[in-house]
Length: 236
Ligand SMILES: C[S@@+](CC[C@H](N)C(=O)[O-])C[C@H]1O[C@@H](n2cnc3c(N)ncnc32)[C@H](O)[C@@H]1O
Image (cartoon, rainbow, N blue to C red):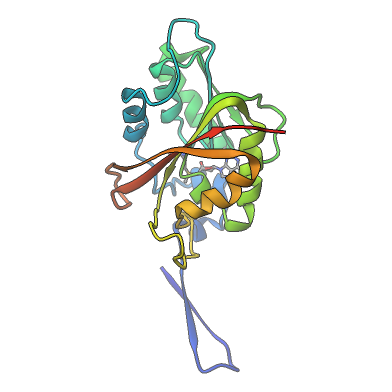
């Protein structure tokens, strides 16, 4: 969808590409209520499963391990079920949208083996005091869903909710490999480069310990992702 505007003092017509989000007045609850959720695949993110199959992260998934995981902006909650299946004792998904959280609750009703292991909380990740600190946080299409001015708040909230020895893993999409590129400002999803993450995370004490290009197929988007894992080092 394209919106054009004409400034009578200018000779130029400016053209702005509208995102799916404009159709729902840039409101996440309205997007979920109206089923305007073009990112939705109704399954977990395959690269997340691959990451754990490679045993890169320092988790020993013995029974009753007490490892905790969080998915902020969890949407319909499928990645939370995967993290539980992989071995995390307690998994929490949070989302701003009550409708999304209701869908997540239905997912548990349909998959009762996750009852008591995975919980969903309706909340604004940037404002909540309902969440503790976690061993693992997974971000997919959450950083890319928020506008640029909110990114520092995103990083601060990540720091507030990760344990000192915890890992923050993000699956970057839509990814631009050029850190100097003029990124497309239209979104969501907002185009991201590695520098977008480094700029907000490294001043807070996060260290990049791993990155890898992964391939996934998702209906609406192109197929290359870039995955980075941050380990938190010193926090004062
Ligand atoms: C593009 S969707 C991605 C959903 C999910 N991570 C996935 O990959 O399917 C972004 C999600 O973030 C949620 N969201 C946006 N702002 C939020 C906030 N401040 N706190 C919690 N959730 C938020 C939206 O409601 C939406 O479900």
